[in-house]
Length: 85
Image 1 (cartoon, rainbow, N blue to C red):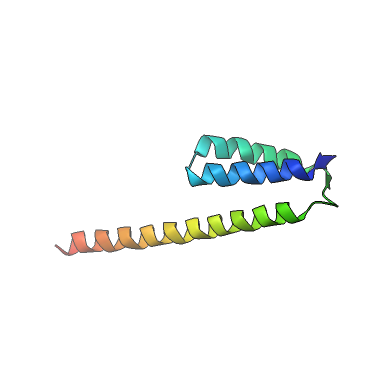
Image 2 (image 1 turned 30 degrees about the vertical axis):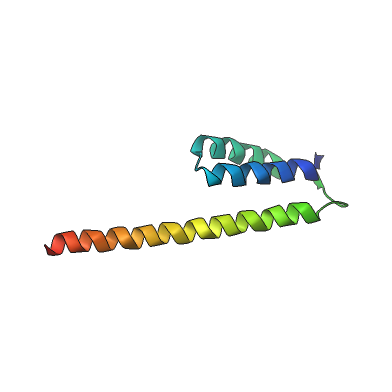
């Protein structure tokens, strides 16, 4: 049986790895999270901090997706302007 703290730690480490774009660390964290999927997590008493960390991770991922979309649009615009020359 896993603990709420293990999930909270995983979320914290994921947020930290995303902040610095550490792909190797993210892959290790992905493996750890996959291992947790098969375990029943006991989070009855102290779930609030985990939910807060989950929300922060969701915001980071949403922001990252928006930033990547903006970069793609800028790249596409730059490529079109180079072809127009």
